[in-house]
Length: 443
Image (cartoon, rainbow, N blue to C red; front, side, top):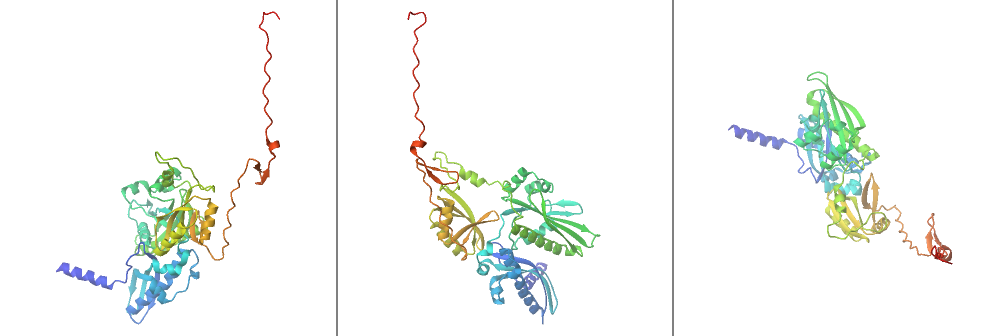
């Protein structure tokens, strides 16, 4: 009987819960931490009005985080267009009466439907993988992954939100507790960080720090939050928040996570958040460059000489049809020998490896003929459509064939050389030595 009552209660709670996202990983964008306070004729009307207000607030934030532009510049969409894009509403805490609804909500957008309003710029700003080490200091005891801290839990809740930062989270295993210590975040030694980043397949380390100060047990809590990056723990920004009681601590930490993510995003857009070239150890190019046993040795480099080379580029892929069409278009480009999708992310940014056997300027000219451009932003190569106002790529200069009768001056000009003047003087044979009779013989 007691078990039956428990099952009935769980079933009733499930019916009373708000609409939740069906799938928030891989096929959706999530925007959380939206506060609403709505008054209506009844509870249900106030709740639905709160959901609609949350959608209107979430769309400019989604557009801003994906494009890097201000939220005020986001396209204005109708409620019907927002309803078509939104796949669910997440409740992150709510209170209500008969006529009032107060809640903190999260809005989940469908990637494929939102891509039609985001355009090709929807995935233009995206960082490489960066290892996240949430440093938590409460009462003088600092922890990262050695214990389940409220600071780490706040970052776990933020994982499904839209952000231009590609955070890498450790699982908190025994090896993580040994490697990722509070002492490690203060070490500027590059060799040790290179080993750590190689293990977690990241190129940079981010250390968001939270220091809590409690006025008295059960009283207000003040938090100092610092955004750091790199082996030198370079500070990008700091701020202070206060919660009235321990019950409001999680809400304060959620707000701090969003503000620190914004600090990192601004630093990424400004070019202040970059990875050091010698910090990440790339093993794949080293293995791929080694010759096979018994195979002829082949040489080549991307130095403009037309030898075989490869280049990996990021490309915005809102849907599968775009991936197929873009891959076929690149394969048809003259000079391209191979096209491989190394990382697939529908609705986001994918990675494409392009092999070619022509000079780089010839490849850019051929891609321009197909309406494509290879551009470099934030130390990353991006393959995108050519904009209407962009001038065409000039045709590459033909190679200069220098004959034996010509020479290239220091200014790059070809000059004709007179064979008679350029020929070296003839070499004369040495005169034979004079013969002398042996000593003692008569002349």
